[in-house]
Image 1 (cartoon, rainbow, N blue to C red):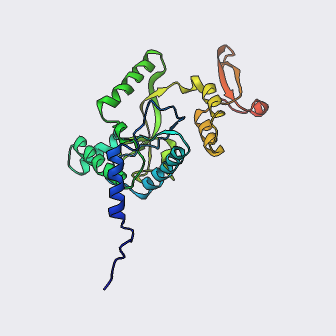
Image 2 (image 1 turned 90 degrees about the vertical axis):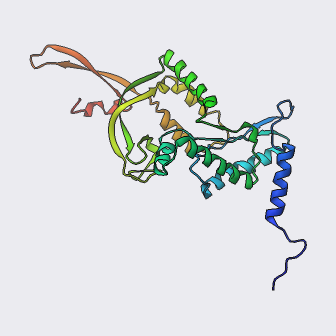
Length: 268
């Protein structure tokens, strides 16, 4: 026969009581009139797949520790939460479970919100949003139309990484050992019409901004520099003639190693 000590810690009772108090007093809701220095802490939004896993717990515990530390050191902290709920993965999951995408997605959001709250994170839930709601994506549409008008968004064919299970395009960073990071399917190379943004028009500004990021790991900055893709080099013009010796349009190429020009044996 076992007995429970009267002063033993009962996590279900203690944590539920504390969380109810936080909700009732809006403990983590931001006071926009505060004179305290502001601190904004946003973790990558979770995809509402149905349930949290330990990767979620790791990420949001780290950001919660940072947020609480900043609050304890006198900052006015905003830690919001939202749901990355749009796209083909949601549609494919709904097809697999034979339910409407909206019903599937919102049910998952409700369940995962409850899980996050049970973990006691200092989140301002008054600012919760989901990317699949018109109130959110109207701003994305507005931004995209502005990019179109400025000539910064354009469409052309391109070879992409295609996930045959998720039925979507993957970034190079989402392909691990030739397989999709989420589905595990062997990735295919396909040429299909794609939208592009002229990010390289702002390459130097983006690179200059990286130098102002205090506390970022050098490995992450290097990854960003590689993604921006700006290279120092020269554009070289090769004169071209046909078989009769008549001049044709010159061939222009870009190289980061003009010192190796004398070793060129073939140009196409």
